[in-house]
Image 1 (tube, helix red, strand yellow):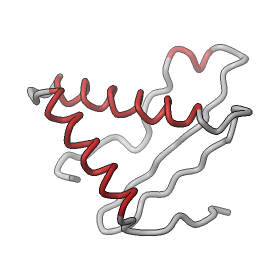
Image 2 (cartoon, one colour; image 1 turned 180 degrees about the vertical axis):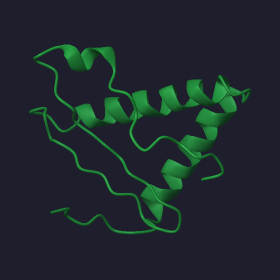
Image 3 (cartoon, helix red, strand yellow; image 1 turned 180 degrees about the horizontal axis):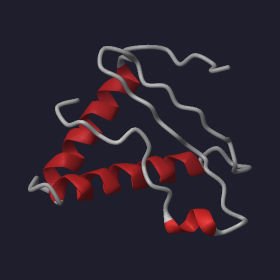
Image 4 (cartoon, one colour; image 1 turned 60 degrees about the vertical axis):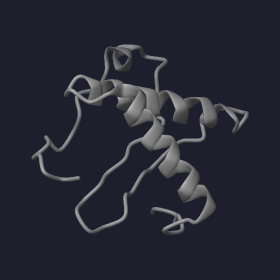
Length: 97
């Protein structure tokens, strides 16, 4: 999972220059440790997060496609692991300070 040495921070998207735009999710990962992610609830209805999470999965599949992977296969693997994690969580979220 961590065989590449990534830059620490990603470049903000062009939308970040819009004064009305806000960051809603940031995820940090390190080998052997659970991910940490601060987020803002942002939307009145929590169901919007379902749309966002699906969009993230599709973007990830396209990113892997750019590296030569089959995007449909990548998306299927993402869905498979999401379903498994919903059924049998590997950890419990904790509130970040």
